[in-house]
Image (cartoon, rainbow, N blue to C red; front, side, top):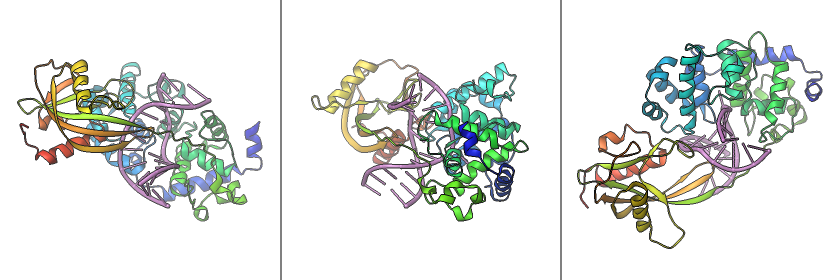
Length: 370
DNA sequence: AAGCCGTGGCA
DNA sequence: TTGCCAAGGCT
């Protein structure tokens, strides 16, 4: 076995002691570490997926205040839950969490299952989240392999596999299963991640302060900055977007709810479409789109804002017009006219929050009849 | 398996 | 300024 080759001569007990001892002394005081309530641990782990601790803290506190228990979240309205996630990104996380929590309430009597088989079946619960919640909340010795853990272990055991590849995680899980503390799997897993966040960082790891320096093969060979191996691919394409803040004769604003799949699913937005490459003028194109897709007769005014918004895989170049709604149309669940005050209770992506902020400034928040 | 899915911070 | 990165999961 490859793992056993890797582990040859490795002082497991001493490593556990050094690692956990350091964590007991140096761990950060974080809001989700105040107790081991499985629900709160779960919420924190979902929020922390691909998201920095500093970003998560205020969201976590507000979320738990608003939905203190699994039942409270299960019974909450979708719109309210989306709003609580507004600005955090990766919005399918919260949709899946909401569905999963309902599932736990109905199928497991509100108790989060204490085994990987059942827990990992829930929506949005993958191998990492399952291991994290099971070990932290229930003390079960399951691996919780995230980016931190792969980085730390790749250095300690000199693993040159590409961590960008899907299958590589399993190799690290196999290692963790052999070295995890059976006495305190919670601290062991958390310590590995905390070490990755504070000491064994991607660039300039603080090896001189590292509690497990003596166990680290990368440090011994002076190659810690070459690990982990991670292939990158950046293929970001630009997408031109035409958007509009449209008011009716009463000064109400038209907003649209995005579909339930894909980018920014279920979030609200100001009506917009992709700009054509050349041909028709942007104004005409958006007006035609509004008529065809929404049955809305609109008359665009002037562009008042141009902004660029970068996602991980694409860039929106948005030109925003003001304008007015000319005729009647039918409001639906996805297409609403709302008052200026009411807008703030809907969840918008950051790019459209910016549009609204800018619009309010330009108009002084007042109705103007063009 | 590889591409999709957000956002803000930092060198 | 630009690219890269952060406690991943889904399809």
